[in-house]
Image (tube, rainbow, N blue to C red; front, side):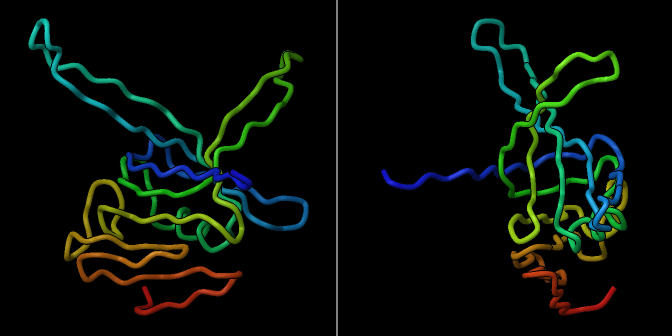
Length: 157
């Protein structure tokens, strides 16, 4: 195989409200955590088991960062498409650490709000989904597509 693919697809719940910071260039960077939970029934005991994985999400796409800041809250259910990236940094104690993150780049990545525009606790009027960053929505909800820094807005909100 001559090429390779680095694509991550996650469906989960937001663990903390998105935090938006600005790079020296003025570009926004949005960070939050996403929990994915796997559940199964233990064959030996019949007991219900569950395992939650936490993922650090970083959005460099300006339009997706705006949407996350406005509409994504702790508890929101999201569909995300991004890339896996690992970076090294030095913590407050001078220890070198490694962080693995799901990154939605400026011209790549997708985010779909699965519980409507209202965020975690309240769903949208139709209970459908709203897509941002290249996807189409389901359930009759409006779709906003981000390509190269422009927004194509079917229904303004």
